[in-house]
Image (cartoon, rainbow, N blue to C red; front, top):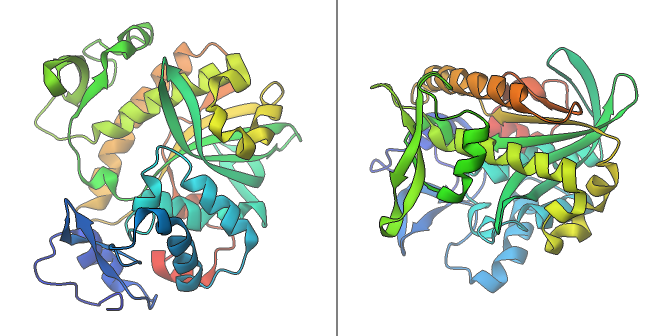
Length: 341
């Protein structure tokens, strides 16, 4: 079926009923498999029965076909985007995938410069990389969705580490099963205080298999999207380790893709931030939930900026939106139709 104007009645996911149903893009879609069965609340661009070993080639071909992309750059960036924890190739054909949004909206930075303003400063980015791993602790790595490479207004090199979210923040839940080995790092950042991040409580807990873990949850009756905060803390630790250790803090299996990032480590200004796709309140109270998440991100950014050890690292004080970041950037026409930009 093509992207329908009205998804099946059993679908309860507002991303489909209130957002993708209004897309101008014409494309065949399938129900995504969830726990072995077709899901009523998730759709993808390929037949979900495609075998795992064949999936990389099938997904790449389908995405280029659906979005009318004729670019070898896209092939390279696609392979980077599925080089992370091994699950991306399964997820990236899903319509509401944040990895898909990052790839489609930003892959062409390597072909067309992206000019933007970040925290009042002007930047020009001319290259991009996807799913860049940096070590957090022991065998734990942080998967950074995007790293943009460019210059600031003074001509200085810049590496912009950027976490991407599409619709995840619309589903606010606590974050459990955070490795207890991170506790020392969390303590150094002062994250266990009642008012460290207004609206959140970070504490010891008991997780999977009855093991000690860390938890992040709302400190009130108002639910919060806590996984985004956990990821940003991990990214901060990973980026800090990258600044201090360079290639030693990266996944050796990925160095073939990211040599340019390593070479800029000693001289570049380094920025850490997060970008979300902004929905209005018609899509599951999207504007309200965006504002709520922005508030807890803002508090976290203040903590991280205060605790950082490197003068070259800057934590963006506010969440970015794709709409603002890309307002002057040339996007493929079918991608623009799909995301209604």
